[in-house]
Length: 98
Image (cartoon, rainbow, N blue to C red; front, side, top):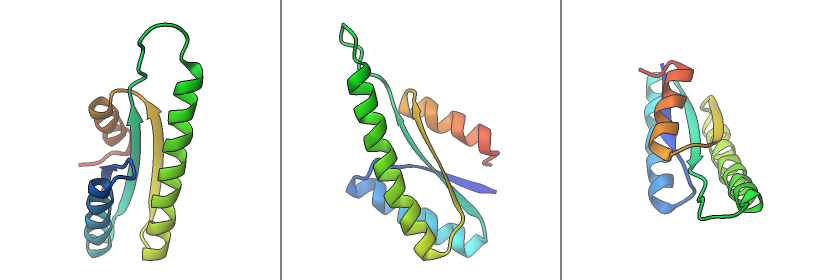
């Protein structure tokens, strides 16, 4: 089984991620970290904004990967441009989370 957790680097996300790591370690499972964002289409071409958000996602997920490695928990990650709720559900399906 893989535990899926949304992560954006905020204090609440860090707390959820820490709990996921604790649970995964106890169960001998892995964690899949997801940063998912909806493109803010307010008009015009926003490619640069999308790219900046994606880079931020890569950075915060990188922090999570380091934390998981230090805890000795197997972890994978995903940064996707998709509504956050839909992105978490899609990621869970893709990794076979139960």
